[in-house]
Image (cartoon, rainbow, N blue to C red):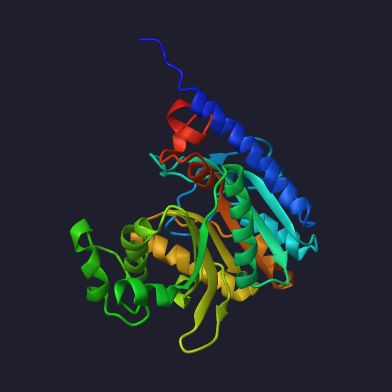
Length: 324
């Protein structure tokens, strides 16, 4: 049977929508004097996060060029932070990133990410700018959305009557019983994540921007931890309807602490039988010099799906992974 092309009027509209969104993004940041930059897609270091799998490839040229094994970036975060440490100032990158094993109706192993950094800002101020950008994008589709900003702990208390910081794991598991999730190897943070993805997130209204901020310190990722009782990770996530669009931090700029977090990631990888990933020593060498800043990454395809009213990522791609 001859191959049948997927292209349709609807898909052509999605391609035009992507082009319009890129134009809007570049104007948005040009108006704010945020510099567009371009960083490497291939790196000698990878992403140690145990929940993210990277693609790797082999360089076959002269050995003087550096490490043979190269990793396709899962985000431009590390090189962007090196530029910040070098004094480039407010900057952003709009480009392709790669994540292995993530393919399906809502995921594509190759996708587009917008990531930007603001010097002297914290996560709360960046939350506001991220909302402003998403509202501008919605206007492209003639839409508006209510904005709800919610503290992570208060969200769990309000919606699930559970304190995410103190409730026993059995209490966290109870609302998830209908999903028959295998508990093997799952820790407290895994159950909290599952409560968001399976219970809270699907109930977010379609025309609402939901921003969740100040996470448990155990979910700090690359964010600063604010001292207190309890200490909290200064990060946020932004949702449009049921889709998570963006993840932002008041960025950690402590190299020793960041190295310890990378090492914890690789320890978890060993526990799970995953391969350890080489850490980014070039980032660690300059991280102490990175100015105080906040940064956020936003998934372009997720935003386009929302704008196009689609539940399938293939509808906003020129060619999905299965046809690439």
